[in-house]
Image (tube, rainbow, N blue to C red; front, side):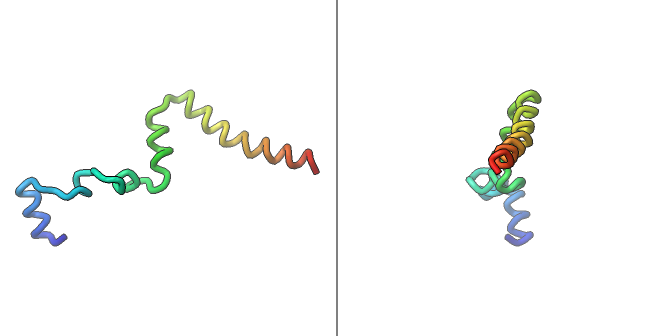
Length: 71
């Protein structure tokens, strides 16, 4: 889009779907593939965030301990 076209759209109040923020692609615009997790963490409270992060650290450690115990 050229500058003159953009200026005309602003002057008339017109906008494209991407500029309005509608559409599937806008969901991933700023955070990429992490957008679902970021939106989830914005909605949940601090205790739930602490629980998710704790599970993310403890689960791999537990798997490694089980694998180490089986050797």
